[in-house]
Length: 218
Image (cartoon, rainbow, N blue to C red):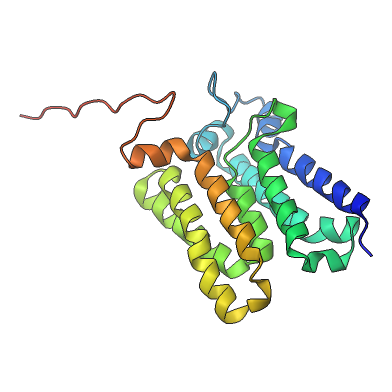
């Protein structure tokens, strides 16, 4: 029998684990500059963060952010509620959403945070490893070819449900309910990258400036 108290505790711990500011703590410990631009509620893009932290430390922070999602979906739920809760999609899915929400709105940073892609990948890696792997490939390829992580992040978020639907349909129909979690995580990631998405669509959002006119060439 699953008690409401253990479920509430699991949700609370999921939010706290997600809120732990891995990048900011690493920057402080190693004497690096802050990861937020003045007035911004989200951290700089991944490329800029890697320049500030350095590649080894940047990779470590990324891995730890991924582990947030993995830990919440797998060992934490078993430790707090029990193994049977891991088969209840709405409990697992809510924990996965809360860890990402905590990452993007850290209670330790005044509800500021990252954009959630690494932690989202961790949640999906624990729930649906094959679709998560292919979404990671989309992110990696587009980030490399586009020389920016932002196009890859938006595209990977859109690709999550596209890869998950056939995988679940053909191989894991027992995980059909987890498509709700995938859809919410995809929308949340795209929301956190909304300014980038709007710029691709030629739209302007609050706080953005129109692109400069192209340079004239003789």
